[in-house]
Image 1: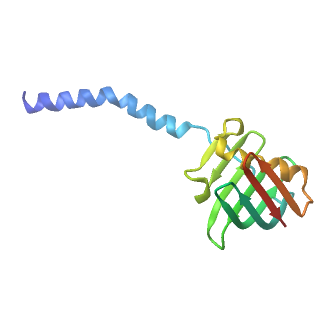
Image 2: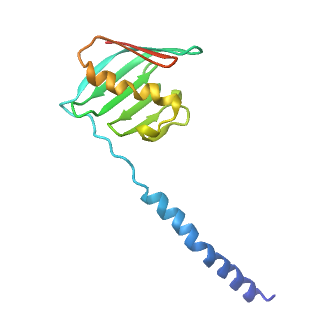
Image 3: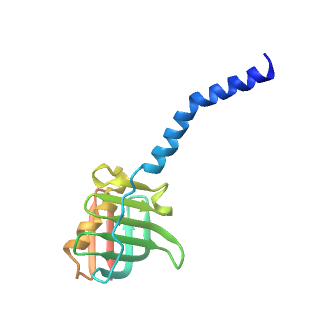
Length: 149
């Protein structure tokens, strides 16, 4: 095979895969990302401590919760300045969980959340229904959450 024929064969092979490559790039770029509302003046903010327990884990850390009357929720759990263990953003239908305590993290419709995150995702309703409580307790399966503000 001559060098020109070899180059032509490579070009034809590349041209066959080009639509597949473009589809992958375009579909990654066009996947819609959920946009959460940013905390604003009308949001309530609570700062305090959390004690989180499972049969194998106990975590005590700092908690910063922000939530709106519209149902938007933002929770950050940290251990000292600059060490975010968990960051949760949630509205009525969608959630995003990030941080060291969340493993690889997750985002998607709340109804499709992995079982290990469902307790965390139940906190939104707790905060929305008891906005003035100084102590909040919540149990989900074998998980227990206690907040003190």
